[in-house]
Image (cartoon, rainbow, N blue to C red; front, side, top):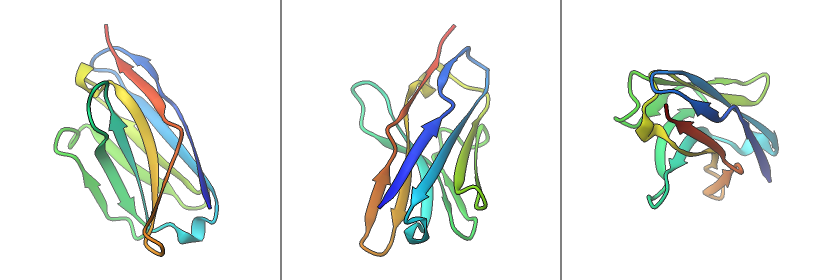
Amino acid sequence: QVQLVESGGGLVQPGGSLRLSCAASGSIFRINTMGWYRQAPEKERELVATIANFGATNYADSVKGRFTISRDNAKNTVYLQMNSLKPEDTAVYYCNAYAAIGRTNYWGQGTQVTVSS
């Protein structure tokens, strides 16, 4: 099993910045890719960004150039730096870890990000 704990959400004005953190524990050796997803009210959960063990990253078009995903393997932590935030970025952000063995997705509890003036 893998446990994921997110932190760093909150309320920010449009144009502001936030950094989300996700600490992984447990059977972390199983993890191949970590990432962030988000779900806005009455919308489906969508991919925001992912980062593979070897460092390759992938971003949703809507966040390219504004968000940056990174990981600190020594701390088993992945980060999402969010700049130039827009009201449409408002959502619950979920940390994800994917293990290819068993094709298993692990999820954090979610952290609320609200962008509003």
